[in-house]
Image: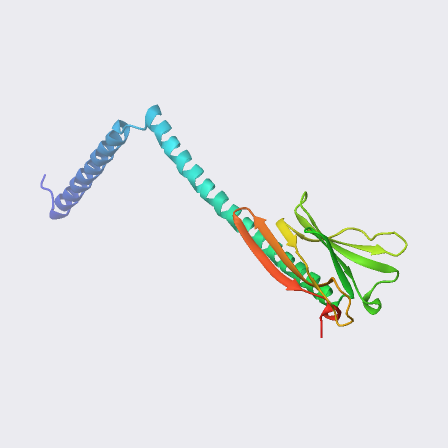
Length: 208
């Protein structure tokens, strides 16, 4: 029985499709064999990789900690310096406004303000450097012997020196009157340090 042209063409199409399917199957099988033969990481390689990763993470953490610490130290130093600067300015202003000033030691200045600037029953104001706690304090002494709370003006004060006071004769010819008090305050935070210097004297104690 003779086959027509249509049957021959259909047979060729079927053969091509079967050949194509066989090639796809062989390619898939070869790929599967390659994947099956691929070797994974050994225990030693895994441990070395983990060690390298841990080392990098520790280095990053150390760098971050050092950076954060430096930022904190700089912020603390800035705040301490500003507080000390304001405190020194306040002290010098009150020394200039005072009726009289006494310097009983290199760590204390006693200021007696005019009556119009005093609090009720106030006698003197004592500016003291507390070397134990490294701070600058203010305390008001009253005529009845009572005292105000101890006010902390500035902290991180590693050293402070008041005086030696310069004395002389004032406009009223009173001798040995304190006319000028040098002030030196050092702020230290970590490795950062700064020294603030100034001087002032009661205007009423200056000679004509």
